[in-house]
Image (cartoon, rainbow, N blue to C red; front, top):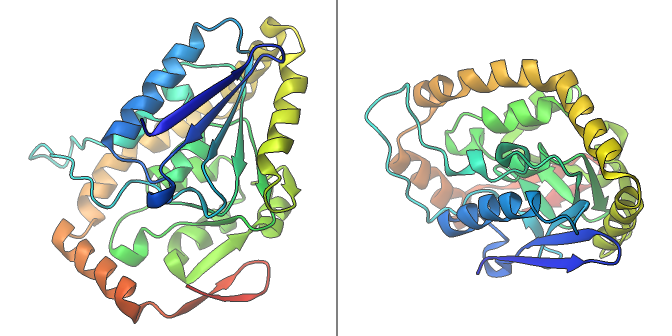
Length: 267
C-alpha cells in the first residue's frame, strides 16, 4: 500500500498520508488509484468530518508523478490520459474540508492535490516549484490549479522558471498560497488542530461553505482545464527527449537556483 489512512473518531478527523518516502512520495499508478478510492471511501464515512493530507517524512510532501510511470496514450492530440486527474478530493466528489500539510518539497503533480485542498499549512522548510518547462513539458493542469490560489504573476513566474527557482514557505505565505507557516516538523500537528476545529462544527454548514467557496472559482477553472489536453499535446517534447533532459540535469548539468525567501540554494 502506498497510502495510509488514520482515523480519529473522537475528533472526526482523518489523516491521509502519501507513504512512498523512498520515492519522495511521488505518485505511481497504484498510488493514484488508492487516492481516488480513499476520497470515495471518505465520502461515506460519517465519522470523518474533516481531512488532513500529507506525505511521509520531511523531505517531500509529494514530487508529482513517478518518473518510472508509463501511461499508454491514444493516438490523438484531443485525447490524453492523465492518471493524476482523479487523485484529488474534489475530482472524486468529496466536499468534506481537506487541509494539506506540507513538509519539504511540493512540486509538479503535487499541485493536483494542493489545488483541491481548502487551505495549506507548511513548515518553514517547505518549498514549492514546477519543473515542467525545464524538462520540455507544458505546465497546464498544474498552472491552472495554482492560478486559483496565487496571483497571476507568481504562478507565471513559478511555472516558467522551472527548476531554477523554488518558492520558500515564507514567500508562499506572503502571496497567499500557504495560510500558516510552522517550525520544521510541525505542519501536520498544526493542520490536525485546524481540522479538529472545523470537524467540531455542524457538518451541513461546513460542507455547504466548502461548496460555496468552490462555486466562486469553478467556472473559470473548468474552462481553463478544458484547454489543457490540446496545449500539452502541442507543446510537450517527445518522452525520450524529456528523459534526456531529466538525466542530463540529474547528472550534474542543472546548476544552482534561488529560493524565493531570498537565500541561494543549490540543487
